[in-house]
Structure formats: structure tokens, C-alpha cells
Length: 195
Image (cartoon, rainbow, N blue to C red; front, top):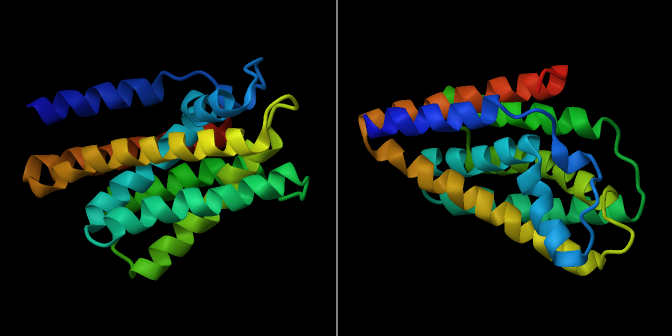
């Protein structure tokens, strides 16, 4: 019963968000702190990053640690591309699709080979990183900002892993897969502008 309540709380939080505030450029300046809060304030980022942790936990070892390591490393590369002004088309679409696809991987219990899962996560990480890099406040220290968003991302992955470890029990599998459905639906909301 506790798993069901937790799932409902997570659903409510994901579904009640208004806009992806991380992309508003709303006044937070400074290096590390600005980078740290950027992923947390954007529900599109939160959904995808939690999904990475959930999927890693669902897949088990070694994916439980490989996927959450691949994402921030590749995201930092995407961030560097954004800082350098190298354009990547359809960033917001890529971010929304990441939530749809990663949520679906969890929802449908997809178990690809590890290298395929890592490549998928890496591709999506480029979009997230590029968004962080292009939105780097002009007053911020790029290195401190990057460290902040990488650490914040890692914490979001860890929260997904923590919840994802519930897959060890039958009710937990249902809760984790339900969370995948919610993340995927939230991604559709981000893509269509409903969220």
C-alpha cells in the first residue's frame, strides 16, 4: 500500500507542473548554484533524469551504475557544445522525447543489451547538456556551473535508482513501471506544450 501512495505522490508532482522553468532564464545567477538548480527546476529534466535511474535499477547490474555515469559525462560534453555556441537542432524536442522514450523503457520493461541502453542514454544526454550549456548565465563561471548541473543530475539519477530498487518486490515492479508510464506521459505533455 505504501508503494501505491508513493506512486500517486510522484504522479501528482509530475502532472501538476506548469512549465519547464529551467528554460525560463529566470534570474538565478552565479556558477555552481545556478548550475545545480537548473535541472531541478525543469520538470522535463527531472523526468528524464529520474527515468535514467529507474531504468538502470530495473536493468540491474551493471546498468544500475553505467547508465547514471554515462548520462552526466555525455551531458557535460553537450554542455560544452552549448557553451561554445555549436547549434544542435530541436533541443527542446529532444529533451521531451527523452522523457517519452526513457519512461517507455521502464514502463514496458525493455531490456536491451547494455551498450544499446548506454547509447540511448548518451544521445539524450547531449540534448540535456546542450540546453544547460546554452542557458549558462553570462555572469556564471562555466566550470562551476557545469559542476553544479552534473552533480544535480547525479542526485536525480540516485533518486530514480532509490525508487527503482523497489523492483525487487512484485508491488515494487508495478510501482516502478507505473512511474515509467507517468514519465512517458509527462514527456508527451512537454512535447505538445500541455505541461
